Image 1 (cartoon, rainbow, N blue to C red):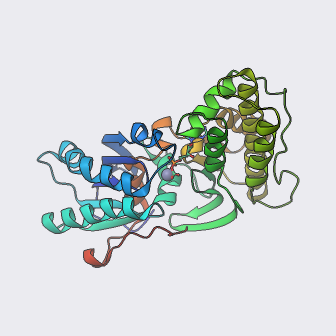
Image 2 (cartoon, helix red, strand yellow):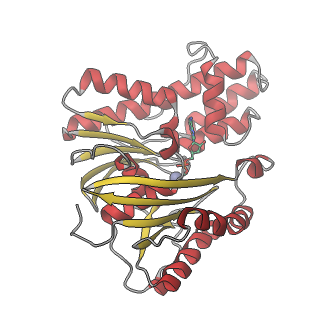
Image 3 (cartoon, helix red, strand yellow):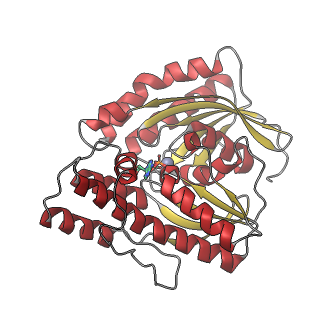
Length: 339
Ligand code: KG4
Ligand code: ZN
């Protein structure tokens, strides 16, 4: 836990990609409580382009953010403002950061700049019994796939990461090949539920490699060749089978490397986080392997609403690990802020 602070209630803002989210989060007796959260999803807007156009996302954040803030805060005042500073899409991040700066200045409050990936990891603390540290965390999102050893708050070691595409990006690209609706991850996993997982064998990339890195671009290309060769059509049984086989290959390597890392570092807690953490097969397979092979380790799976982007996790990270910015006006969006 970071040193004692008099910040107990934060207004948290998240605008790094395609969800505008505002939350009121509190730290009470060492636990993170979500008082209120609103999420305005831009999914219908980005469906037309099958992906996020950053400028379009930013305009939408501008349109809805003030209303969300007003609805969450009302006449109350938090102790501080927390905001995602990066990583993410620059125009989208800027909307949240500049709004947070204006609010902090107008209300005379401290500003807490939050790393979006650290926040994904700390989503496991929201309304939950705090995981014991050190913890091993698989973060799987649209832009990141990383295995992180969290030794203490603010002290992290990156054990491995993807060398090319992120897991979520691979789901999104497979969905695009099959002309499935945006966002791709949920579309592919829905189709996969009705597919025959053994009908096609795709290779689990880097499964045999003795490291904690990942790679999904080869698997994506293997799926593309299959789809082209067999002229797989959206909505067909072949499409469902491709989704099943792709999902199985991706999940197998994610689960295997995570279990291997947890065994090596003998952690008391194993955490999953990020948008792909909403994937049912990933949750079930990780839970089954952890139960079987890591009896001493507690597995934490965030509630589905804290897997994809949300402001609750930004508030949690701010309260648990972040110190206020020395100067509000020096805080700037940082799209490439790596852990
Ligand atoms: O964490 P997130 O909301 O945003 C980023 O920080 O990137 O993650 C979004 C990613 C997208 O690639 C989306 O397709 C994927 O998470 N995703 C899923 C599922 N739900 C969201 N992937 C697989 N299965 C799902 N159920
Ligand atoms: Zn995210």
